[in-house]
Length: 80
Image (cartoon, rainbow, N blue to C red; front, side, top):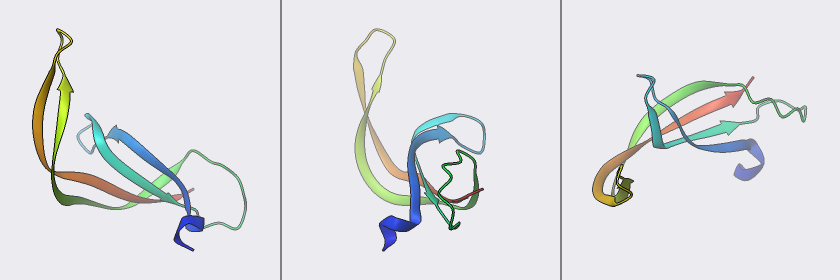
């Protein structure tokens, strides 16, 4: 089953430029037979998924600003 291959799903993280991106989704696959829960993984693929949706950015004054996103990044990684 697909769900048995995934070790974890990580929401948010640093992108390639080092900036934090809360929309980044990383799927970490468990390719080992052991049950260690290592937090380290190697990214093997990255792609932007085309999907239009609205998000709300929190402003310094506490208000929220509506923002349309046209895609979000996903990563596929394997556990070390």
